[in-house]
View (cartoon, rainbow, N blue to C red):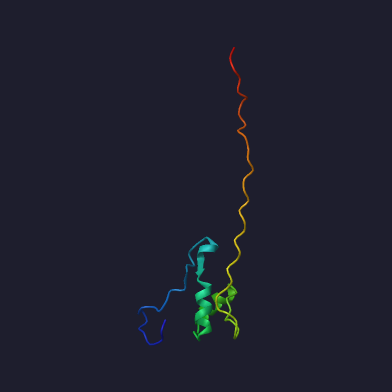
Length: 95
C-alpha cells in the first residue's frame, strides 16, 4: 500500500494473501515471491507482521547486484509409461 492512500484505499499490487482460518498449510499463506523480492529491492518496507510471514517463508531482500527474479526450476522429464498388453483371457477360436 502506498502510505499516502486511505486505509481502505486501492492497493498498488496484490502480492499474496494470508488466511489463518485455513486448515491446509499450503493455502494458508500464498505469496508471489518474485514480485515480493522486486518490491523489496526497490525499497518497499514491510510491516512487522508481514516481515514475520516473509521470514517464516524464507523470502529475503535480494543482495545488491543479485537479480530479484528467482530462477525457474527445470521441468523434470515425464517418464513414459512402458508399453503393456491387456491382461485379459487369451483369445480362443471355436471349432
